[in-house]
Amino acid sequence: DQLATALRTRLQVKPHGSGDSTPTNCVTPVKCNTPRSGSPPSARKAGPRDTLRDSPSTPVATPKAKKSRPKDIDVLALLDTKTDDKPLINVAVVGHVDAGKSTLMGHLLCLLGHVTKKELHKNKTESQKLGKGSFAYAWVLDETGEERERGVTIDVAQTRFETNYKTVNLLDAPGHRDFVPNMISGAAQADVAILVVDSTQGGFEAGFDQGGQTREHVVLVRALGVQKLVVAINKMENVDWSKERFDFIKSELALFFKTVGFKTSEVIFVPVSGMEGDNLAEKSQTPQLTAWYKDQSSLVDIIDGLETPKRSYDKPFRLVITDVFKHPQLGLSVAGKVDSGFVIVGTPVVAMPAGDGTMVKSIIVNEKSVDYTVAGEQCVLVLGGIDQSKLHNGNVLCEPHSRVRTTLKFRARVLVFNIDVPITKGFPIDLHYQTVNEPAVISRLISLHSKATGEVIKSKPRCLSKNQVALIEIKCERAICLELFKDSKSLGRITCRYGGSTVAAGMVIEIT
Image 1 (spheres, helix red, strand yellow):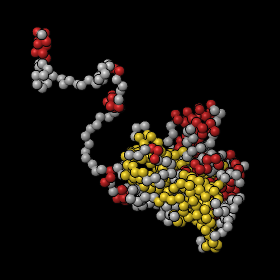
Image 2 (cartoon, one colour; image 1 turned 120 degrees about the vertical axis):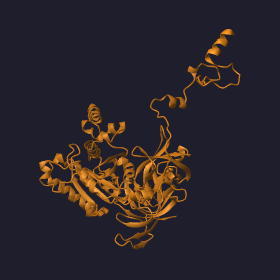
Image 3 (cartoon, helix red, strand yellow; image 1 turned 45 degrees about the vertical axis):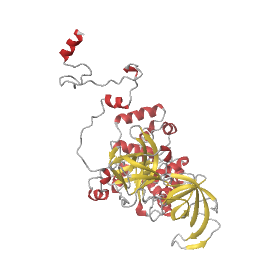
Image 4 (cartoon, one colour; image 1 turned 180 degrees about the horizontal axis):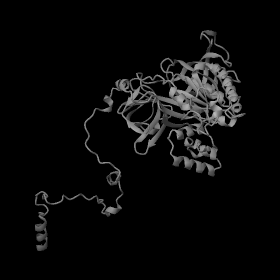
């Protein structure tokens, strides 16, 4: 007792229960997190707060100046005054499976400084181990094990880069006929398409003749609303940069483009070498090419000169979901392209066709957190208040008070392509719209129309054959999201496929 009294006197601590507060010269005790079970502290599992507290990389919260909420932003006013950003353009790269699309675009990204020497060296080393040394540049975009093993692009690879005058969202689409649905998904998000063509003897013919994907890809990008086409005639080093070969391929393609609906002014041809990187980022210095290529434009020069499409900023918000995933830090997220309007952090939205409500917690564009995003942008939205099972690829996010229309049945004016079997009532199809394909049937053949004037030339035809324009009724198995073509050119376009081939494409005229 005498020892305890002496210690209390020296430390200036009153006995427990005396009612006095802790002295100012004494350290306030910290509560111990020992579990109630009596087990030692070391046996307690670390929780999220412990990880946050102990992590040296976690920044300490500091008071911030008060600012307006993101929901209070006047986006349209900001867009009117914003002049520092480079115009954004979405570019899909399409073409036959062996045309060299991924190699060309991978080499371009290297030349523009978007791939480090270390990453390129790693690709070269690993590709040589598999006996595929020529695939080093392609592996910049083909990142999955299956793509690298098979040597073909399977899914749409997406990346972003900048030129002197443009910000480019690049969509590298697969060329193999087995992955045409994926190609459609990529091309549906594009403003412009780069068609890569193999210039070698037999290479061009394999892609362009029946069975090759060059023709179908051109038909599809046109049907999906692409108005501008850049034709990169690739592997020119293998034909000694021959002007005769370039002119031959150009003339063959030009005739075909006219039948599809591309005007001469909407198509640009450029000779390139994806493997050697010639005439990609800078004008070629190869004497065999400069001797006759008087235009002197590189691929990047052509991209810089492309007109940026007009965006529908003032229309209702629409975003077609291309991916649903759980972000390790941020939680439930969806990726997609904003088709029209804009969205701000904190905005309530609904996922159609189900109509489930959710909230936009945060927005990521080009791996940066932003307060809002607008039409034309590829983005990631972090959502709250909704289960992941409620969201699917092809769902459309929109405003609760201005929802996209949903339907099981609609009418469309379509152009029938080169088909082997006539289309009749009840004809089964795979209906492609935006990033989704759904099983459907052509339930009615309503009328045939003139290709020149659009006038009705026959009502209730018994069947449809190639190159005919017709008004048809399509019935789906599940509800889908559509808009009339006059209201939304992207959400109002549809493509019909059957037996692995594209049989028709057109625009939505009436939703029933």
